[in-house]
Amino acid sequence: MQAVLRRFMRQAQLWTAIGLVLVAGWAFVAWMTLDMAHPLVRLAMPFDTAWPWETAAAVFVMWAGMMVAMMLPSAAPMILAFDMVERGDDGAGRTGSRSLAFAAAYLLVWIGFSALAAGAQWLLQAGGLLTPMIVSNSEGLTAGLLILAGLYQLTPLKQACLRHCRTPLGFLMAEWREGTRGALAMGLRHGLWCAGCCWALMLLLFAAGVMNPVWIVFLTVAVALEKWPRLPAWLTWAYGAALLFAGAALLL
Image (tube, rainbow, N blue to C red; front, top):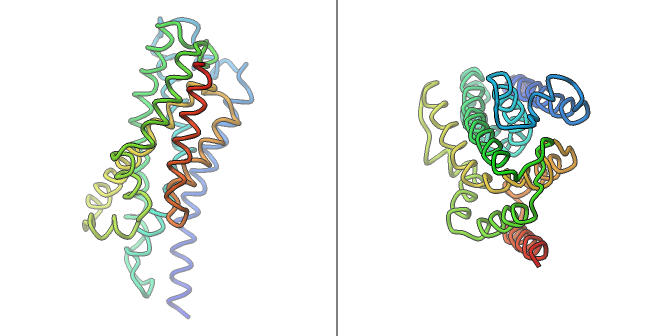
């Protein structure tokens, strides 16, 4: 009974912390997408490419908040598996600090991705391919992003990254390291595999609008389903076929 209670308390502490981050992330996304007239939100939607430092910072924060909100749900199976292994069978293992370090390192990868996405936003806007609302105004760009994402779904690299994301215990057994530094290293490594899996899908935010709440939720669910351990692997191929069809239809 004591072991069950310890296990419950550990899980409650971990998921409370993760839940608070998720709530904060989605509250941030909701605020941005529903109150685009707010001066701080407008900073993230510049009308030209002469970005002062506060505009660049606002764009980066916008992307970082979105990536935390969108990618943390898909990492839930891996974080739970890490905590179970760390805790041990009787629930009397170490405190949850290593589990939190693992999750934080995972999110750090996506925060780094946010810097690259902000740079891509600047380049696309400089090329006249994005509106100030951060929506593609080029059918060629939209079709290209759809076809790129569809083709990447079918590549061996995508399949290799997805296997690591869909087999939490296998990843942990192969990559296990002790200590807080070990947890950080494992979280970073998992984050890199995850970024390798999902980067092309995240670029689709430019296609239908970075500030489009329906599109944000749709991509979040799609990524989480694709990485969920018990769902069929053919789902990835279905995504690829649908994206290729949509891109080709737009071009034609």
